[in-house]
Picture 1 (cartoon, rainbow, N blue to C red):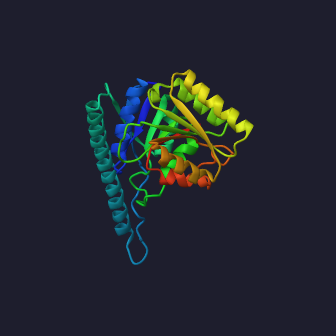
Picture 2: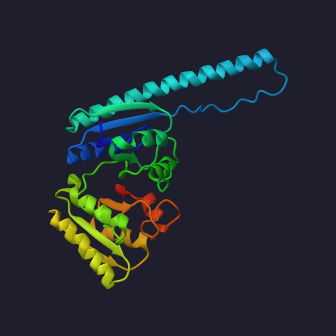
Picture 3: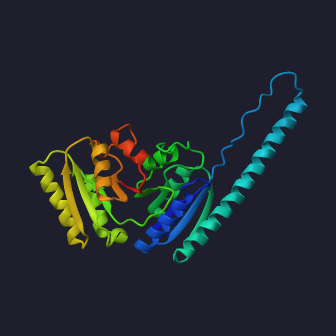
Length: 284
């Protein structure tokens, strides 16, 4: 199955948001929906201290017990995963999705998504996973690794669903963000949703020309679009615009060398992703 919306779920607080945003995206794109749960089969048991006055037989017995415990934990994790997938499928059916699928794999999330990449049209993932730090502005390490690895659009979502009513595109005229505008113009994902294109920079002829191109591309596709050029520090300027306009979904390029595209590698934009209370669609 190709061109599907894939939703990565675990036991974190973000799983319900992932389910609901994935259901919304699946119906908007008229694309199949598959829920994915990955059981990390790397042993989580702390290494035992087997030094000291322990006989060889006792040591072997302890190792056997640890191996048995790991096996029991793996079986329990798989069963928990099946329960979560069944609940996610039910939730999607109730939201109107036709025949959502489920997949459970052993391994790591990054490796699994890399293997399944050709099947993915859009990946929906929570801001943090089950084992991540609970701090509000903490970004899950799995998300960072997934963004670095996957060459597919990634929708990072909060824990509560809200159907997008205004979308902001952080635009800088680069190849990545121009491709993103064209992708949005062709996609049914934001049909009927006003798009705001924002350039952070000086009011120059080049920036004005780039903005007009983006607005024309979106409007020619039948989308309602307006734009702005604002000077200032990128993260603060975009955050202020988001709050002023009531933006509830942000679209950004995932990588690049300009300050607006330099995500997840120490830039000021990383702070915006960490503090995001709205979904962020990352484009490659």
